[in-house]
Image (cartoon, rainbow, N blue to C red):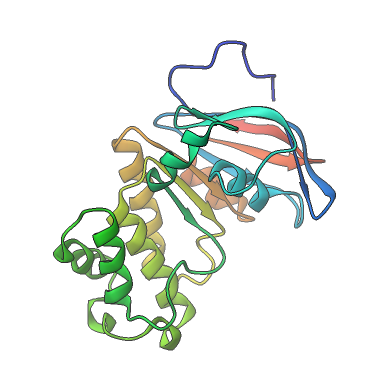
Length: 225
């Protein structure tokens, strides 16, 4: 991908320039450039261990970079204010972001309280993903598919501006796959952006505006809409 321009695009939700990241002392991302704009859904693919999940953790402001510059939702890396954007970001990773000893309802209501939303909003989110009937079951007693849907309810409730999905379709049954497309569409309508990591090239092509591949730590463009 071409190097980032000297002036940051006014509609950039994510802007990375020359970013390098080490994990446990080993280089993973190398001199990576990437821009994701408002209203855009970016697909990310690559071999196992190529750095896809590391890239999402950087964009989620959870992992520092070794070299390079970047910004997320208008806040620059190295600025303490970048932590203020975290409530506006939703990351759905390989493990559900739920407290195992709490029920699904308690998990969602806890998030509702943190974000100033009523309990009813949490209950509605669980209902929207088909979990109303098991809302009082603890997360530890839920199947992988149920946990995945509960994570999607968390996204639905928090209404993020930046949605980061890491192999989110894994563990979802066919009836639940449409929930992901609905969440992405909701982010787009709010003027936000999404990044979708998947090994499923067909799904990436169908659900995203363009796709990049992580090759030797850099983002290489594959397709534009």
